[in-house]
Length: 318
Length: 306
Image 1 (tube, each protein chain N blue to C red):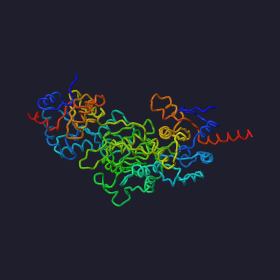
Image 2: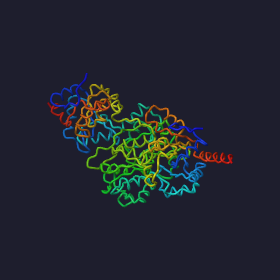
Image 3: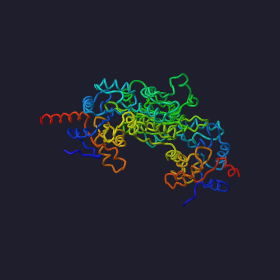
Image 4: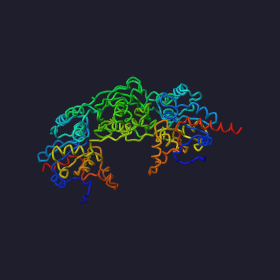
């Protein structure tokens, strides 16, 4: 059966998946809702990763989740049954934000961070100097007289469960200087937890800082292209035309794939639904095309079936 | 009738304008005071307007003071103002919940003691004010216990704003029947001296983003804040003058409600801002062009004294 191309929201399985994967060198996976949901692995995901690597594909993990540093991600992968995932294959928005500050913006000075330990650790690992909020005197003062660090040259906003008014005020003050950079790890307004529950995301905190400062943040995470450029800078010859982006969120993963020139695949084990995908497809809005996945699968576990079928046919042919 | 706009109010025009209105509504910050300093001549302007038989009201987006607190502040600064002449958003939001939304139930409040008091004054129960620190795991946050009596989330100025408060608001708002009200959308407090203080608009925006729902905003330029005054005092918009320093709140409110508008240049917006809106030709911007402008409201004195 011929493979239907273009942004057609085509549900594929079996040999269609096999054909698609044969034409790709690289597969990029989002994590939450694709290979795991919280602490529960998506059944078959570890086998899929191993299978793809056996087929000679490069596999990358591209996540907006900035709550843990890469080393912790490696442990999580191992804990959930993935036997062969290395730190160098994991690209989180926190890691990429640190890389951006160090290698692209080449910031000379300190970064004022609104972020959880996951964000702070990546900056420290990358050698990016940050304002030490734990230092004596940093936490004192009211909204009218708290201390400001004169060396701050950038503000980074990420997921921060300790976000409060003073942090918002400090960020806003630093951003009064037009030379001070303004970055956000990711735009996600909320994050899904298991069982359909949600918690506020980095995007809602960034919205507060943008409103206070009347400035727009440069967003590192999907759907911005930067995370792809970060991967490409470390893996020469990464061709978007030979890469497949697999995700569960149309507004981040699929849009990201489209913007980077990759084919996109929506898996239905996470946030977005087939109805929502079709909604974008049927929309008259000229921009909605980029939200429509090329392909759709129920779960990435369907990849396993694709390879088994081929093996069975090869056995039959003798 | 097309009237030329953004005209300098001077000479005989001042008396002409004042004779055409019965009521003058003043914004506070940047108009009659700046921080804790009264604008020179402002108190006299208000006195003389009243002596000339005009009714005077004060309309402010600030949600941190009750009407009583405002009246007291104004007295200390030398202004003659009674409690029922002042309309701040703490009071107007309580009135909006009571008379327009006809709220029956509790409010999940992100706000301050003034809002607390104004809500209690109209008999609306709320969840309180003060710090709300994070505890536990993300799963605890997502499953935070919700008070079944809460029927509305209300966001005003709160310098104890925190991730946990944002989280609770978002959880309540996942019920589409839960109402969502913000006191105002101002982005920064008008403070002098370097430090920039974020205002309620930031907190409203954070909750709107997390909840993926827009808030109903009570303060300028929403017409409700004018309706709040007009319905109580039976005002005729065509015989009212709105005096303010911000094109996107004060002047826009005036336009939205059919009032005459006067921009004073002692605050946020500049004459260049007004003229840029005028030249733009865009309908959304033309409504922010004032009918008249003065350098300071003290410029009204000669006409009032004469």
